[in-house]
Image (tube, rainbow, N blue to C red; front, side):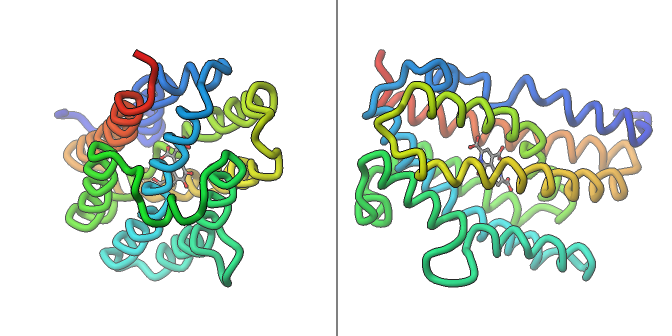
Length: 230
Ligand code: PQQ
């Protein structure tokens, strides 16, 4: 890229990654159309748990690399959202309840026996990216959350309609993300719009978002390979 995009053009370029987002993956499409088997749902929930476990670690990595106190003060909310403030609350706990509501035990999620290699590699790559790249690129990589609310709303409706064998109370995680994700992506967008004002930094941010789309896509490829009907 040789020219600098205006902040709005840059935001448009970031948003155009929606077509690479994992909502387009065949595994998610089948899930949202009500075609997943209980085994597929359980395989997805057990494997996605590894992502949930690592989100606060990547947010800690971003904070540790960020010299801006005001950014850190807001970013830390993400760690609180996922880890909770006490035993029995927070997003990771909600995900465990989603698993229990789907027929998995806490033990089999926590001991990670179901995690397939491709999911582990993809999630670990995301954490490593955020530890080793400039913090603004790591923030850009989190911007898949711009696209998450639409997928979450679609998923929530699909679960309530098709997967009635799952206790509706177990879907609280998705409901919470409907408000958390827009708040988070708004902050992330504000940061990259402010800091990425040269061709090189804009290109790096776009590449970071592309990389993150690949992380999410690879996770579903691995889950589909392990549990999908082929
Ligand atoms: N992405 C982040 C991030 O990169 O900081 C944090 C989250 C996501 C979550 O907490 C999620 O629950 C989440 N869920 C989905 C999903 O279920 O489709 C996608 C994403 C995403 O787009 O990265 C996140």
